[in-house]
Every structure is written in structure tokens, then in C-alpha cells.
Length: 233
Length: 233
DNA sequence: ATAATAAATGTAATTTATACATTAATTAAT
DNA sequence: ATTAATTAATGTATAAATTACATTTATTAT
Image 1 (cartoon, rainbow over the protein chains, first blue to last red):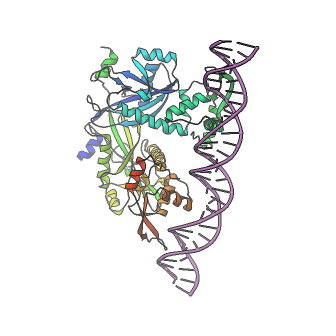
Image 2: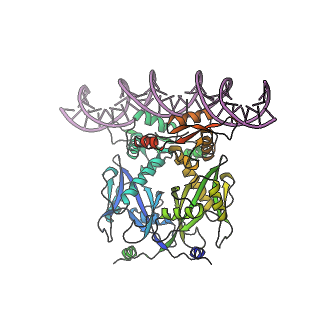
Image 3: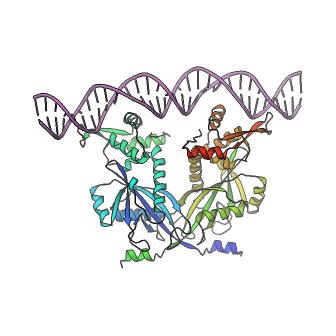
């Protein structure tokens, strides 16, 4: 058997596989990121994304969901693969590749308690501290993917409470796209897709109060099956 | 030390990391994919993407370039990460995750000779055979990424010879998008970006002959720096 | 000289995106 | 009770982009 084929049969180089979670949340009109104090040397105590090594009998997605559940107590969180980071020298400790996945979660007080127990902190995306290794790059890449995805699929709703107002939705898109949108044009556009259900309730955090809406998953599913394009702004 | 932290310090589960190459080419107006006869059991002799295990001291990108060079003799091929495949049971042999990368190469006779030596074959993308494992899925996903990318960045030129005609370019975009385009509108649009240089030569495979163009990398670089959007159709 | 082929070209109609200012509902203060 | 303050809600005109569509031109083969 040739050396080449032998390698193929019995490859010798196993590598640690990790997954790191870019956890986005939305609060007070700001896009936020959940970061953690690193618990191990080297760089112990530095800010870091949360991650885990992938276990031998575990899907990579499972590993990420496991980590998220440990931290937030939530199951079935929306998550998308961002990309993998495979540079040989990316981690000074081990040879370790990482598959970055971004998660969208609804921030609420319950989450925040759990989160604090893990020494974590919600940072505004515009005010992130330095993170260990290539984690800042991971955040930038994931944000780019989120921007892309949000433009064509209504994943933004994963970041909002079930009931939300149009101005809240606009703030969210402004935070994701990092630019301002015209209120009239925005409202026209999102309502034109007919996937929002107007409720009889109002959110009363402003003086006048704004009507609450919810996302119509049923209509949405029908529309995507018919090839409808959900471009927003 | 807690069990959790100990795991973190000395993780036990190393995993084989592979990279698989989705190699696109363009010939006779068709988008094509380079596939190989699998050389090892199980599934020996079945059609497969080409790939390799990533070596312990090798970047994942390096591994893919190494494989590509072995097969085609070409260095510095255009390549983009598609996504990773991390299901625990995806490969019946080993626990192995794979990072799929798609490559765009200019098919020519020289390549084809080298390629045939490796038991490979250029299949039209519309007529792909069954591939081993999750490789058909990898192709579908990579094609989707290629479509996305081609819409906003002129990567299609990586698939064409240095000199090409507008009708060839149109055929290429039709093959990638898998739909037909209007010749007048297409020409207007691509020329409007001012990144094509018209040459004095004609390609004479048709009776009338069509003017050859080349891509103006310099102007392109300037334009992207100024934030220009290269949407094509 | 003619026929066959594919390249090259312009315009009008439609759709989509953009810019922009006022009125309406409600609460807090007096 | 009246007024002021705040933010939600709304329409229209203009500009820009996209789409649909048919004829002429250059060249080669007969």
C-alpha cells in the first residue's frame, strides 16, 4: 500500500474541534453580544466568547446548543453556522479548529440572572472589549452573516419578544445594519409582506403608545414555499 | 478542580478534520464539477468529492490548496469556505468533521490531462451522479454560496479565461443562476460597472465573432474601496 | 452574391426606492 | 381642566432601477 493510501486508511492527525458561540441579543434599541471571562490559562480572566470542545459522539450543532443551554437555560435557540477557523497557529495552547455559530436570543431578566452567574456580560456591539484569540474576528464575521441573512429572511424576530412594535422592529434593523432607516418607508416595506399580525394591544412605554404586532409564521411558511422574496430595506 | 474545568484543560476528544473541495469549472456554456472515484473502502469506486485529512501543523485552507495542487497542478486557486459538516454520524468509518471549500478553476486541456490521471471526471452540474456520504449536499450548499457571492462580487471571472466575450460571460451567469438572462440588459449592466476592458481582438468561434474583454482588476479594487456595489442581475 | 449565424444595440413602460412634513394619541405637568 | 411634551402613524411626488422587447450588423460558408 502506498504511503498516501495508508494515510487515508489510518490518518494520524486528530485535532481538537471546538465550537464558539456568538450570542446576539437586543435590548434598549441596541444590538448586544454576550461575552465571558475566560476560566482557564492562558489568558485566564480575559473576555472571550463562550465555547466548548466538541465531544466524540456529539454533532457540532449539539455541542453549541449544549453550551447555550448551560448558560441561558434555554433550549432550541436559533443558531446558524457562521464559519470555521482553521489556522494552524490560531490557538497557542492546542491545535484546535473552531466552528463559530451565531445565536439569536431574547434577552430578559430571567436570562440575565443565569448569565451573571457565569461571569458573563452583555456588551453593546459597538463597545466590545478586546476578546481572546481570534474572537473579535469571529464577531465581525458573524455580524456580517447576520446582516446578510437579515436582509432576506425575517430572522430578526428571533431577537424580539413575541409581541413587538414597528418602531422596535425598526430599531432592531437599524442596529443590525448599523444605519438609520426612514420610519415611513420602513413601515410600508415590512407591512407590505403581510407577515405581521396587528394586535389590539399597545405597548405603553411611550406616551402615545404603539400597537403591538406578532409575526405570522403560518403565512410566512406559505409565502416562502411559493418563492417569495422577503427583502427588508 | 471541577470535572468541567478539567475537561477544559485536557480535553480528551480529538476528532479527524477533513476538508472537501467542491471544484467548479465552466466549459461549453455549462457549469461543471470535478468528481473522483473514491480510492478507499468503504464505498471504494463510488463518485466522491476530492478531499484530505488536515494535518496537525497545516491550516485548513492550506490542506485544500495542497489537494488542489496535487490534482490540477495549479497553485493559488480561488477558494472560499462553504461550510463545515459536523454531524457525529456523517461518516460511517471515523468520527470526522469536514470543512467544505469551493474552488473556481479555468478548465483547459492541460488541467484535463492531469485530472484524468487521478480518475476524475468533469460532470455538468445538472447531471451529477450520486456522490458518497453527504457530498451531494455539500455541492448543493456550495452552489448556493456561489450564487450568493457571484451576485455581489465578480468572482465569475475566476472561471473564465483571461480574455472572454460578453456572451460567454452571460452564459456563465446563466449557468450559475440557473436561469436565462436578457442579452441587452445583461450587457448594459455588466458594462455599466466599468470593470471590463474591451480589446481589439475578436473571438471567432461564431461567424460574426465577438469582441474579447478582460477584467480590470485595478479599477475594480479602486471601486470596492469606495464602497461600490457590484450587483450583477 | 446569397444565406446563415450570432453579436450588438436603444427605448418605452413598469416597478421599486427614496425623500420628505404633518397630524394624532396619550401622558405628565401645571 | 388645560397645556405641553412626546412619539406613533400616515401619503405623495420624484428619481432610479428593472424589465420587456425587435432590428441591424459583421462575418463566414455555400
